[in-house]
Structures are given as structure tokens and as C-alpha cells.
Image 1 (spheres, rainbow, N blue to C red):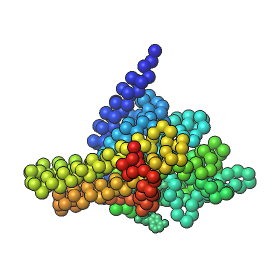
Image 2: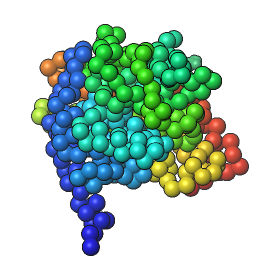
Image 3: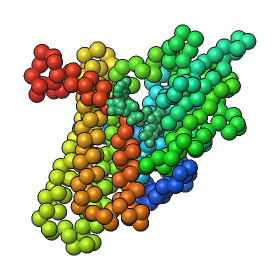
Image 4: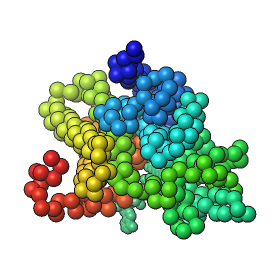
Length: 376
Ligand SMILES: Cc1cc2nc3c(=O)[nH]c(=O)nc-3n(C[C@H](O)[C@H](O)[C@H](O)COP(=O)(O)OP(=O)(O)OC[C@H]3O[C@@H](n4cnc5c(N)ncnc54)[C@H](O)[C@@H]3O)c2cc1C
């Protein structure tokens, strides 16, 4: 009889080993319009694209197994934040498809991932947002998504579109060969290789089997807000990478025993470890069984993840400042890896509505519970 649990653990361990090796050799891309094509192909080759869909040769990364998924996201983020962002988008799409998809949609998505297709979730939009319009009895898309990571490279985007009633509907559009991606606006401080451009959907036909879940499912609590722990896990990898680069620099230059440098390194380690503790607890609360069963459980998890976002952002900003002060001007030269890594982290720390997230988390304090009991 097959020992599924043992096989799964072995599979996961070997996937982690492959990811560690891959993360050490992530391509250091930094040009406008660049994209980590080779790294995505290497992720596909080790089964990391199928893993979040729970199938394929490699044992799946269980979306609901927070420690496993956190480690994967952290490792890839440590290798490179643009690759980490792209893989996080792939994982987010897998989570939504597994949660809301029909058996056929899950099967189709798994097959596409096994063929090497990268997924992504594109929700952000400007004035010309994406709508579902009915023409001669058939559904079509109209409008454009902005800040879409992997635009022109993601083969299977999961997008949100307004339906005729103004509700948000998830769609898995079948892309055609038209040139719909536009990266000309992505002239960014950092994260250049994430190809975060705009994508025009106008004219694409939508079949009934391309609609994922029902109206409103995308933003349904707690998963929409609580899922933010995954970008925090990638950011954590970026934070720890800065610490590693600073350590290497100080040691190579014989500055690691200086008391001021040691004190700053101590503070930097505290920031990095604080981020890790927040992300880990956020992951556990967000992925806990029964988190969506009661409004109380959902609200508790969402509040924690909202605070974790702020905590990780603060730890990231502190790490940036301390690492830059420890290394000095050398870290601002384009020949030094820290120059790009700092820009990537500073850019990726910008996430939607941080003030609202902090205040929503803070509101959870005003319950009839002592502060120390709020998440116990
Ligand atoms: C590298 C990268 C890749 C991305 N990839 C994707 C992707 O693939 N798909 C996707 O959908 N999105 C993507 N995004 C976009 C992301 O989801 C957010 O839309 C974006 O990061 C928001 O950043 P912002 O600083 O403009 O946020 P904002 O929310 O505009 O925040 C900026 C500031 O304004 C404040 N603020 C926000 N709302 C208000 C308000 N109403 N009134 C007053 N103040 C306000 C905030 O608290 C903050 O201080 C990506 C972003 C990055 C950085």
C-alpha cells in the first residue's frame, strides 16, 4: 500500500531542497521590461508551478499548510523579490481556483500549470476598469487592468470584472495572440523584472466555464484580507536577504567586530525575526481550519493579518535603514547587489491601503478582552 503521508513529506523536502538551490541562483534582473523567464522555467522544472494546485509528480504544497507554504514563499523571496512576487501571484490564483473552482476548472488549471503556464491575480485597475458585457447573448470583456505582474508573460491570469449589476466576478479568461500587455508605464524604482504593466482585455469572449465562483466571492472575508500574509512571507525573504548581504559585507571588510556595527546588526536581527514571528502567526491564523466558519474567527484572523502587514512593513523599513547605514555608500553603487535589493524591497513594501489595514487591525482591540487574550 502506498504510504501517502511519507511520500508527501519526502516530496515536500526534496521540493524545498530544489527551491533552496534555485533561490541561490536566481537571476539578478534589473532592467525595464525584463522578466525572469529562466527562473520561471526552473520553477516549472522542479514542479513548483503544479505544487500549489496539489497535483503532479511532486507532492503538493498544501495551500492550507502554513509552515510549508511560508517557507516556500520566503525562500523564493530571498532569492529575488520580483520572482517571489510572480510566484506569490501564481499561488494566490491557485488558492482561489481550488476554493471556488469546479472540478473541471481545477483540473484544467492543474493541467495548464503542468504545461509550464504561470498564473497571476490581476485586480488593480484605473478609470477604464474591466467589465463583463453581454453582446448578442454572449459575454465579452471590456477594459484594462493596471499594475498586473507578469503582463505579457502570465498565460493564465485570474481577473476581477464588474458584472451588469456592478458586482465583482472572477474570470479565468482564455487569452488570444493579440498584443494586449503594455509595460511602458512600469519605469519603477525597484521590482523592474516583475513586468508589472497594464493589460487590455477588451473584446475577449468569456464562456460560462471561464467564470470562477459567484459575484462577490473574490472579496469574501476572511480569505481576501487574510491572504495578505503570503506577500508578507515574500517580503520577509527580501528582509532576510538584506541582512545576509550586510553580514557578508561587514565580514569581508573586517568591520563585523566593531561595537557600533554589532549593535546595529543586533537591531537588524530583531527586526528580521520580528517580521518572521508575525508572518508565521499570521499564516497559522489565516489558514486555520474553521477560520471562515464564524464571523468572530474570521474577524480575529483578518485583524491579525492586517497588523502583521504593518509590522512587516515597519521591520522592512527598519532593516533598509540599518543595512544602508552599516554598509554605507558602497551599498548605493550599482555594482553592489544591495543597491538593487534595497530598491526591490522598498518598492514591494508598497501594498494597498496600509493606513486602512492598520486601523482595521486596531479596531479589534476594542472587544471585551484583555490585549493579551485577543489572539489566544
Ligand atoms: C511589484 C508590485 C506588483 C504588483 N502586482 C500586482 C498584481 O499582479 N495584481 C494586482 O492586482 N495588483 C498588483 N500590484 C498593485 C497592488 O496590489 C496595489 O494596488 C499597490 O501596491 C498599491 O500601492 P499604493 O502605494 O499605490 O497604495 P495606496 O492604497 O494608494 O496607498 C498609498 C497611500 O495612500 C493611502 N490611501 C489609500 N487609500 C486612500 C484613500 N481612499 N484616501 C486617502 N488615503 C488613502 C494609503 O494608506 C497609503 O498611505 C502590485 C504592486 C507592486 C508594488
